[in-house]
Every structure is written in structure tokens, then in C-alpha cells.
Length: 284
Ligand code: PAF
Image (tube, rainbow, N blue to C red; front, top):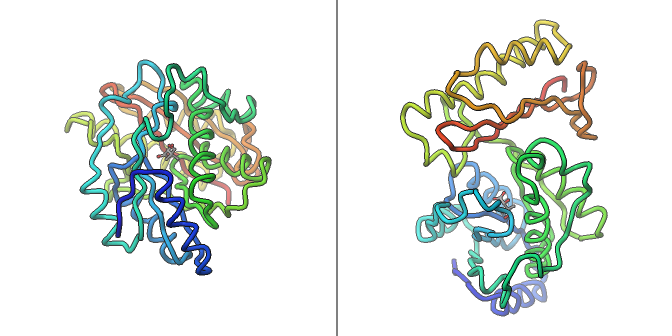
């Protein structure tokens, strides 16, 4: 497995692989890989001939008061994981390689997903975040030209926006959705879990517990999302600063007040200053 830092170099490699008839899989990541990422890489290795894992902490998807500077950068360990799973290339460009000569990000041509999809859930409190994600994913798609690209369902709004972007902008990559992966405790895996103290982690566990309580309530016959919301609130640790807990239709992402079709219960919350997200699908 090779680590490539330059766009021209990975382009040449991919061109040759494509000339040899190889199917290319891309797994876009920001590194600090965990078992959730490993499942995406495994999926790509199973479904493509060549797997490229991109490792790039994308500055333009972080807000001014977010954790861009302290986001964990662990390339050596990431490369080891990629190699063990059978990836062929890690593409790890620098910020200057991806955004050369850029004084201000407002000078950049951006890909902006529809406002209706970004002015909700995470996009509401992370203004501009999904423009940054859509722009870097577009750049990665243009550099790697993947036949398939694997994204996790933990970032369910991101996945929905990318699927829409691929459809609207006629990208040829097939988007493969991969299930969210949890610790045995129920905590959704996230690179940001590394920031949690023991006490934070204990409180963070109540995020997934709240979602499981929603599922349980639904299975006992509660369809009213207000009642399900209240059930979840009784479970959440008071240390948790809730950003949102919302119920949206799995296909349209419209708000749901009564569950009559597959519905996503999505939550974002801060624990000890660390922003965590999680979701569960009910009514399938
Ligand atoms: O999900 C992530 O890690 C990032 O948002 C992505 C898709 C790699 C874009 O930077």
C-alpha cells in the first residue's frame, strides 16, 4: 500500500489502474480511523478492485470556533489500518495541495447544496459546514474519479446531501451507504470520542440510550414524535447540552410528527464541549 500526497501523482496512478480495467473505490475520511471507517474500507475492498482512502482534515468544513486545529492527525496509524484491511492507496494531501494559493476561503468556487437540506439538523448550527463537505467531496471525486464511494450512516445528513449532489451534478460514482458502528456500550464510534474524559463518556452513553428508548417506545406503539422526544429527554444525562433531537422522513428529510414510514431520529449534543452526533432509524 502506498501513501500519496500529490494530486498529480494519484491522478496518474488512477489513470493507469483504469486503463487496466480496474474498478476504483474511494473512502473519503478525515483520518483518525476507527472501526466505523474500517467497515467503510472493507466495503470498498469487497466491491472494487482498487481502494483509495483519502485522509484530509478539510479546513473549509470547520467553523471559526470549531476544532480544526486540534482535530487528531494520526496518518501513520491510519495507513496501518488501511493496509491491514487491504486498501491500495492512502491519498493524504496537505491543505496547500488541495487549496493552493488561497488567501481566503471566500475566494473559492464552492459547491452549495440546497438550503432546504442544509438549514436543518447539523447544518443549522454548523453554518457553511455542508458547503465545505460538498466542495471537498467534489474535488476528491474529480481527482480520483471513483466508480464507488463509501460513506457512513452516522453522518446521515451528509450522506443524504452527497447522494443528492451526485444525482444533481451527474457524478458517475455509486454511493454506498454503510451502517453506523457502535461500541459495545452503544456509543456511536467517532474520531471525536478521543476528546471525552471518563465522566464525559459516561454522560455521552445516554445519547444512544435516548435513541434506544425512542425505538423501544415506538415498538410499544407510540407514534407521536413529541411523546417519543419526551421519553428520550428522561434518559439524557443533565450534563448533555442538546443541540437537536429531531425526527425526519428517511427519504425526504422532512420533519415527521407521527411515524408512519421509515423515520430517522437524529440527535446532536455537546458533552464537555465535544460535539457528538448519532441517529437511529425506526418504522422500517
Ligand atoms: O465524514 C467525513 O469524515 C468528512 O466530512 C468527509 C466526507 C471526509 C469530507 O471531508
